[in-house]
Image 1 (spheres, rainbow, N blue to C red):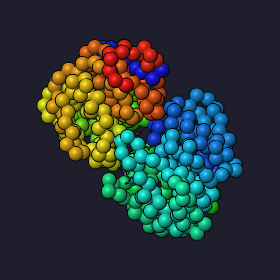
Image 2: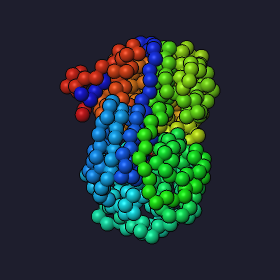
Image 3: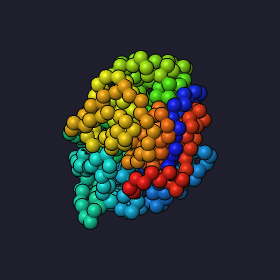
Image 4: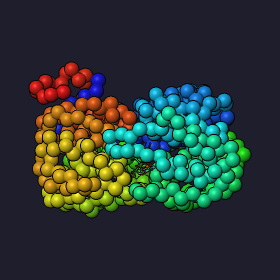
Length: 432
Ligand code: EPZ
């Protein structure tokens, strides 16, 4: 069942509650390996990436129990340091185990992640940071091995060509919390998911100052204890549902949409002329569509800049706004795989290097399109909601990595959307 059929033009209405953040859940699941005591994580989203991370924790020897829907208990009494390629290749984000293994075991042996469609996904900054702590790092047969037996706290600069690194910061944090001495991380990522990880680590007994700022100071402790922590809401999912409400010209309320997590995104919606109302604590409402909107110019940046994970979805809105809009992708310059599919639906978008030049204002028409990655698949579904006629989005397994029941939850808001087997897709003679 990996195609979704959408009949566009239906105005969505109602309230949706976002799930826990995927990009907070993954490093926090890894962080449960930092202690032999039980950690309870709540509001964990039911996503394929999360289920896979749980499988990897079990591989390392942790006892993992589902205590209730969205509630996982992990007890990592005895764990082993090796993460094999057959696991890492299926989800490159599993590299966030590196810091937890180094922190707990003082050693790690993990397969190097490959790249993915949105671009190369290097870990040079992760390894540079660990080496600064005094870890001995070696590479062999596609694996990286880390010996942290003589690691000690020091100053680490974690900035790269594109600025800070989210998972790199998570890895350095998880290594440093159990490394003797004082570690100062400069150019640390400030994403809300990193803040959430810091809060969880502090609940476990870690000593971290500067949470939420680009300078984190960690005083290593001898050991950490268990914790009970609730995952923050997913800001990317919240932004995606807000855009669904705007593009369908409906009236949609999103619970769990924290304005402090969506600053740049909401600023650009307001600049474009979209009406976003505060409808209560962590609750935002959109209504009024996009017909009085104007073009905007977006550059993706590390938080608090405009999130690259909302870029593809926002480009669908800009394709509907008359005038020229620009999106420059500073984090992953190739992250425009959705554009060629949107062009099949009638969007007028040209790519010049890392910039998409969007000549907006026309109504898209439904078509069979191909999802290439997680956020591109969400963008294509948003396009289908706004388009006239029928859109078939293929390879929607990408979607299930980061959105819990996206199709059924959009249907609950009134969308004419259904998940089908690819054999039910009309064969219009197109090549495979
Ligand atoms: C996290 O990936 C997210 N994934 C990504 O979300 C998100 O797009 C990205 O941060 C940026 O916000 C998870 O948290 C699981 P980075 P991460 O290290 O940590 C370069 C989604 O759709 N870089 O912050 O891998 C890198 O190439 C996913 O949910 C180096 O050069 O991203 C990129 O250009 C996609 N060397 C930039 O930095 C390094 O050692 C940011 O990467 C590390 C990164």
